[in-house]
Amino acid sequence: MTLLTRLYLSTILANKTVILLAAGLPILAYCLPQLVPATLKPSLLEPARAQAGWILLWTVCSGWLFLSAASTGEEWRRNGLLVYAFSREAARFRRLRLIAGSTIGFSVPAILFVFGTFLTSVVGALPGDQKEAELWIILNLQSCFLYLTIVIPLATLGFAVATRFSSTVSWILVSCHFGFGFFFQGNLAPYLVSSSPPGQLLNLLGPHFYLADLTERLVFKMGPLPFSGFAQFLGYFAGWGLVTMVVAILIFRARQ
Image 1 (tube, rainbow, N blue to C red):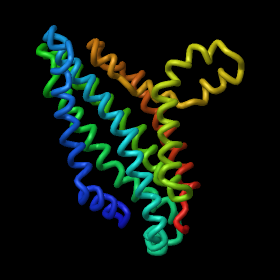
Image 2: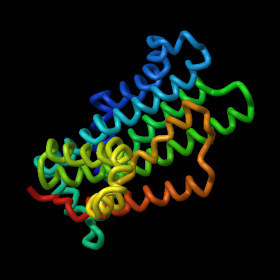
Image 3: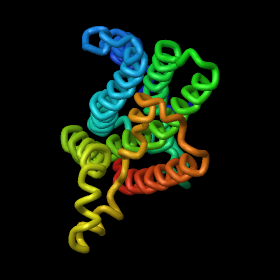
């Protein structure tokens, strides 16, 4: 475990925020549907828990995780820790190793959060039929992999941008990039495809992060994605993740 990984994990564990979020997300996802009219029809309660869990997860991801990564990058650059870590690494692939160490650190809370959401969806919303239950578990696992493929590279990008600019600028840029791909790209896609060539180019090159949100399939119990479709989605987001990591390595700056 690298120096940056150990430092980031010790920092987030010391302030207890990640622990509160990891414990609070499953509790909120389980309890929130009790406050809405879903309780009037018991068959809707379990899908509502799964829906609440994944919505909360994506919200925390775009809020706390990206902001935590950006704040860490700015703080480490200001106090000279990145210069110290940079000097301790061997000359070859030094920047790559520093980015990799920080990425491992950001992966831990992301995995904790998605694990809690997975447990909520499987334990609190598992269908009674055995065949449906198996498909439900597979669909939730697919959601977990797609989530991690998107979130971890974006957190690393937020960290890298903050080493060159400020944490506020970094969080705004990364959150807007994520929000455009997750919320607006799906809604704008039909209009962009039928619009002018610039709109079609934007639709082609823009990040279609909304494809990773399988909440609708959970709510309506549509079953998991076919293996070929899931592999295509995973490959697409892995490609975006690779591009994001390359940009993060290029932007990263250890010195003030």
